[in-house]
Amino acid sequence: MTMAGLLYIDAFAGLSGDMFLGGLIGLGVPEKIFSDLPGRLGFEGTRIEFETVKRKGLAAHKVNIHFPQEKKHRHLSDIQEILEKSDLDRHVVEASLASFKLLADAEARVHGTTPDKIHFHEVGAVDSILDIVGTHQGVAHLGVERVLCSPLPLSRGMATMAHGLMPFPAPATVELLRGCPTCPVDLPFESVTPTGACLAVSLAHFYESWPAMSIRMVGLGAGSKEGGLMPNVVRLILAEESQPVLKDSVWVLECEVDDMNPEFFEPLWCSAFDKGALDLFITPIQMKKGRPGALITLLCHDLHREECEQLLLQHTSTYGVRRSCCERTTLKREIVEVDTVYGCVPIKTVPGMGQKAAPEASVVRKLAEQAGVSMSVVYWEAMKQFGGRQ
Image 1 (cartoon, rainbow, N blue to C red):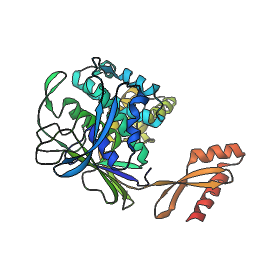
Image 2 (image 1 turned 90 degrees about the vertical axis):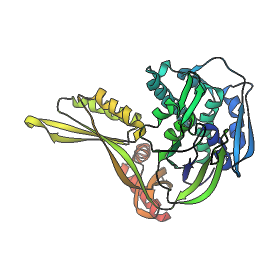
Image 3 (image 1 turned 90 degrees about the horizontal axis):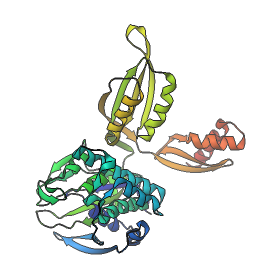
Image 4 (image 1 turned 135 degrees about the vertical axis):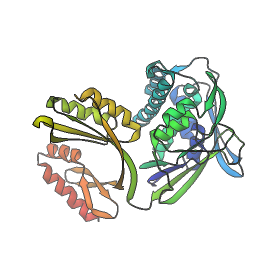
């Protein structure tokens, strides 16, 4: 496991699942992590091979997945069953399933149906399942705190798919990349596959400029296609961010209510964070005719915007939701664990700014209850131990 905090996906020529796996091999993820996956997922007769290839003179890692031909197409429930039966870490199972749900949502919008009725063609094949699960397994092995991705370059053309001749970028790719930065690229093949787009959206925040970072390792992953003016590779970079200030954007969703039972705020609060909300707060306001009301404000990333909008529409008495995209500047945070007489306490802090530090409240509360003391006693003991480490 690496100690680098940032994984940057430099997808200058595109992105696919096998390219991502190759890049992870280049970053030092052991091949065994991937070669063991077919057995752990119950894919008999499947094997994964690794080789080093050249793309326009650049040496890159290529991952080749060999599997028996299948006649059946899998639904989301089939893939969920495969994942749930495996012995993979729970985090990897949940992250992989979240990626497939993103794909199912995108395919459902394309075909005008519901996610549970979608039967995956190319993306439901063994190799695509291994691409997605393997990528989440590899990223988990690296142990990075943050994943960034460059704008994705989209090529134009036509390709034969399960439903016949289709344009690329594929319809599902376009749906997945709603709200994400893209740019054109002149390549005679599909530069970004639905699997590649899904992995980028589910793993990373998009960052349009080159990040300020100290590069530690570089891994190149090769795709299957050749041709065009640039090498068909993705460049994965492990790095440390060289400044504590991070810039990104979030959506601010708002609505006002003056006729909602306050008891209904609690389930709204719990559901919001399950849907990916970064924060939710309720502000008392005075509305028309002097009525007391509440301004409900929810913050989320673009990936979760539609779900969070639907949450507000379904679980509050509002008839509409306003939205605005706001740029923000945040400090890079890290978790430091300190040992106290009451137990281990994680403390959120900012590197180089020791005065900004706060023990994790839920842990403090649990340790205080176990010891029969107040939260403040455990809190200040943790801060005392943290101060002694500075």
